[in-house]
Amino acid sequence: MPQKSPGERELQAISGKLEELMQVVMQQFVGLKRGLDGADFALLKSIIAGDERVDAIEIDLDDLSMLFVANRAPMGPSLRFMFGAIDVASALERIGDCIEYVARHAIDTKDLRVDFPEGWHLLQDVTTKAFGVYERAMTSVSNRDPRLAKTVPGMDDSVDALQDQAYKLVIEKVRTGSLDVEMGIHLILMVNKLESIADIACHVAQTVVYIVDDERIRHRSDVTL
Image 1 (cartoon, rainbow, N blue to C red):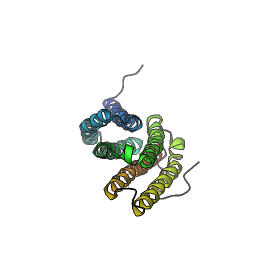
Image 2 (cartoon, rainbow, N blue to C red):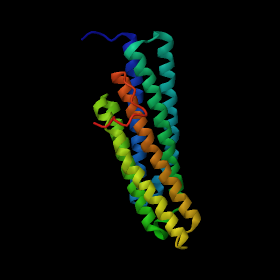
Image 3 (tube, rainbow, N blue to C red):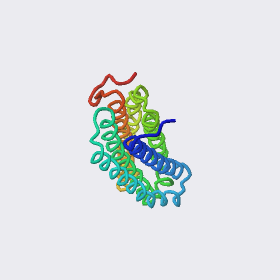
Image 4 (cartoon, rainbow, N blue to C red):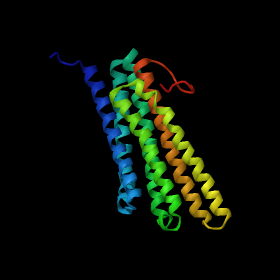
């Protein structure tokens, strides 16, 4: 087997670091889902602490990418991959922040599960749907599969629908006096962050299409296959 060139090894290191970042954020997301499903607030606290690791890996990937640019002056597919990797890493860091935000607010509003079970179940549903969008987007990154990536934006509609449902539910309960306004606001804020995760995952999927096919599909409505 022929030895890889220094540039190929550097690209492989960037790819490996990106995969590591995806896996760490995936672990954070799985922890959030399990923490909400089981009302495991100790697990949710560990997610808050784990966000620092996400930030550190993103910085490492940026450093590797900048070194690659300085040493290799890449062009064509290598350049697209490098800029795409930086873009995806930045998106993953934002997703990590959103996960940490939801975990922190879920801890701050422990009573939501008991006082507003309908809202807690809705939060669980939004988390599950957003996780599905994230998981498919990350699979498209790992496999460099633009066809799969193009199916991701269509999945976001179910998250948007649940977000609208949450708004209507909170407004209805607050108006009837059966829900504390502050608790309702916390629920809306958490749902909004989960919807943001789905949006960011769509952005990641669009980046995959750019990396592999050199095709820009952002702001297009005809990308679902």
